[in-house]
Length: 163
Image (tube, rainbow, N blue to C red):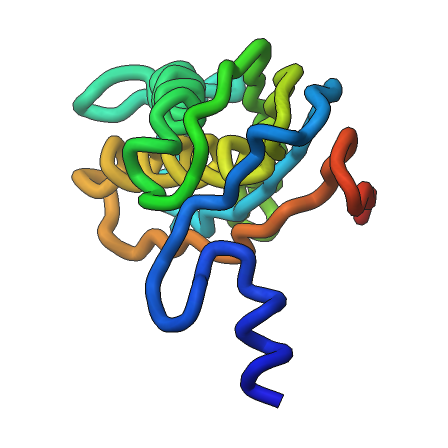
């Protein structure tokens, strides 16, 4: 029923958005991992040198790490009902598959707090992918970002690991 679906939406009361009250929750160690894929055309892969892509704007993957961490740190500024989280660790890794033309981006985030860290991991992976796009668009505009998803989360009510 519509009432049941509304009750499952923790950030909605009636028809209005709301921030979830986490004041009475116990702080726990929380970790999350998110992943996305950037599909790069051959022209971009030809610029790949020693697992780095040199673009007119500079080293792409090194810059994407910084963008990913910045994205994770600024999640609450981008997502209206997301709580500000004290990010204790954030790391980005890349999986280069030239044969399929895919660049996998994984963002792992960690905190000790009352609310989850999955939005930070998702924002970090997204920001890193957008950075790759921005830095490589001068080489080719045929770049796609796909498959953004949460891979794993630990420390909350519903832990899971889809790796």
